[in-house]
Length: 287
Image 1 (cartoon, rainbow, N blue to C red):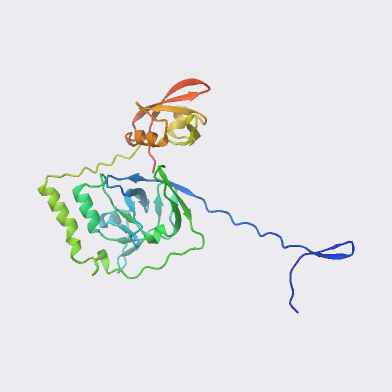
Image 2 (image 1 turned 90 degrees about the vertical axis):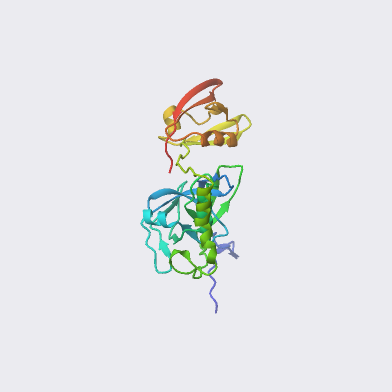
């Protein structure tokens, strides 16, 4: 005899089968909004802290099999390579609050990045790439009209293990003589008189979440203790201008903020209850 666990109900002498109770729905993973920057070469760049050090500039590269970081970054972050050139990260945190569990990276000076940095092509110094072994853990929404990417963890999914990629330093047969291209680009830059300027000037932190409404760019939320909160910006305010440029759209607002650095003072003109108010905001530091 097969036992079936189905609830029963006796109604007016009739036996009625009841459907099983709905199983509790699993909680949806928390989405993370990760700020990104388009470099001069139109690569997507995010800022990452490794073992609490950084932030470092890494490209998101769906064509890379793993996270790669330069030898200099590995040394600063205290990464210890194994005999195959891999290193486990105690912490791997992207700007926006996303902490990647069990992240491993490949320590190697990629010739592509050496060449790009040698010529100053990207406009910023690039310290590595984020590849498959981290990207595959998330469902990522790319929307170039917004200033952040959405990362949602893929529950129950484990990326495929990577095959051997050669020994320490990332030297392998597939790369071959291409390794000379990075140092060659640096030499060429010297002959051409090119001196890349990688002075780190991160954008200032405002601490506001905006939403686009018919009336304009409206403050949706203000982070407690942020520069915007200290200056008096409030949810419901409609932003009319920031500094000396119009900021009626998110893209124009981001463009204005990109030009403002930590410690800079900007003036925000907002419309509140039918009145124009000018606030002075000293931009703070994010990641």
